[in-house]
Image (cartoon, rainbow, N blue to C red; front, top):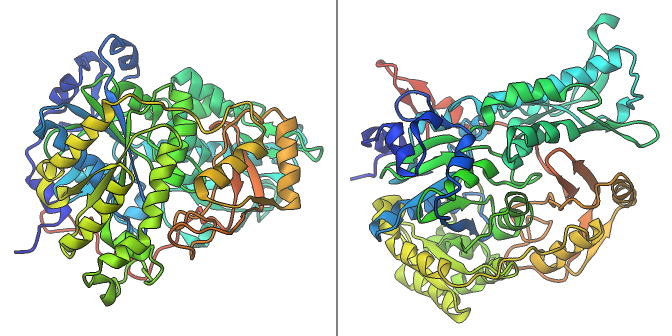
Length: 565
C-alpha cells in the first residue's frame, strides 16, 4: 500500500491546542497570541520570563553537500525532535519559515515530510502568520522611498548607478529579474534599471533572523545600505528616514510562530533567510526562547556544513551568545553516490538507474564529502553525529559503508527511518545525540571579529572549503578596501557561493582540491551585520519550471487544498 502524502498525513494528525504547546515549554498564557487553534505568535517578553529556567542542550542539524533533490535535513530535524520523547527527553525545535516561491515551484514546502513534519501543514506552507508579507512590504517601502528621494531632488547625492536596493516578491518570477522603472511622464519617477529578488533573499529577512529585540531590529534596519554617493559614501535607510516605518511594518513579524509536530513536539517557525547570500538559519529570538523550553533545543542550518553550519557558528552564535553542544550531519546513500562523481543528478528527474543498484564501493568513493563536512563541524570544537537518512531503495551494505566511515573518524552514527516511522525511527539517533551533547564542548569561532576581511574570507576558503587560496577581482579588492575604511571591517563574512559543491564550481563533487576561490564582487549587508563576497552567479529570483507544483495546487469540491507537497 503506498504511503499517504504529507498533506494527507498532516490532516489525520491529532493536534493539541496551541496553549498546551506553549505551556509545555514554560510559556505563560499572557505571552501567547493565538492565530486559530494550532498556531500562535509568542511575545518577546518570553525571553526574559524564561531566563531562570535551565538551559537546554543546543543541537544544530546540518548535512553533507546536498544534491539537487535534497537529503531530508528538515525531516531529520523534526524526526530527531520527536525521537527525544521516545528516549525520555523533552525537545523544542526551531526551523525556518517556508517561502511560497519554492512551495509553488519544484522544491515543495518546508514542513518536513512523511511522519516527521511540522503542522498545520497548510498554514506553515501558505502565509502562516504573514511574516513573509511583512518582510516584502518593509523592503518595498524602503525601495519606494529610495526612488521618491531621487524624484524629490536627491539631496543625499545618491548615485543612481550605485543603487543596490532592488524590490522583492515571494513568487518565483524570472521575468522580474531585470526591469526598468520610472517610465512614462516625469511625474512617474526617475527612469533606471533595477529588478526583483525573492523575499527570502531580502536583507530585511536577514535582519529579522538576526535581531535580538525590537530595538535591535530598529537599529539594524536603519543601518541598511541602499547605495553610495559618487564619492563612495554609503547611503542608509536611516538617512532616508525609512527605518521607522519599516520597523512598524515588521513589529509583529519579529514575534516567533509556535506550531507543533505530528507527535506534539513544540516547533518555533520563524524567518527564512536565503541560504546562498545570507546565513540560512532560523531566528535568534526563536532560539533564545526555545533554549529554555526543555532538555534539548534542536535547530537546522541551511545546505551543507560548509555553508549553513559555518554561518550558524560564526554569525548566528556570535549574535545570540548561545553555544552549541552537538551537531548532526545528515547524509544519504544517494548523496554519497552522487559525490563519487559518477552520476548526474537533476532536480525533477528520476535518479540514474545505475545509481539505484547496490554498490557500497560508490558510497566509499563519495564519502570524501562526508569526511570534510565532519571536519568542518570539528573545526569549531563541536561534536558531530552522523544521521544516515534511510530511503526505501537503500541496501544494508550501503548503510554499513557509511557507518564504517563514521567509525574510522571516531564519530557516532545512526540509521534513521523517521520519514516512515516518525520519532521512533530516529530513536537511535536521539540516543547518540544525547550522548554527544553531554560530552564537554570546546566551541569556538573560526576567526576573531577584529581580523581583517581578507583574513576572514581566506580562513573560510582554505579551512572550510579546502581551497588553496583566494583570487580577488580588481572590483572586489577595491570594495573590500572601501568597506574597511567605512567601518565594516569588524563584521563577519557570509560567502555567497553554490550550495552544490564545497568549491565555487557546482560541477566539482566530493571534496575537491587544487582549486582557488574566485571572489568577483563584495557587498555589505550592514543592517543584518555581515559582509558577503560573491563567488559565481547567484540566482536571487528563481523561475518556475515547466512542471511546477503551482499547476497541481487547487481546491476540491469541499474547499480543501489539494496538490500541496
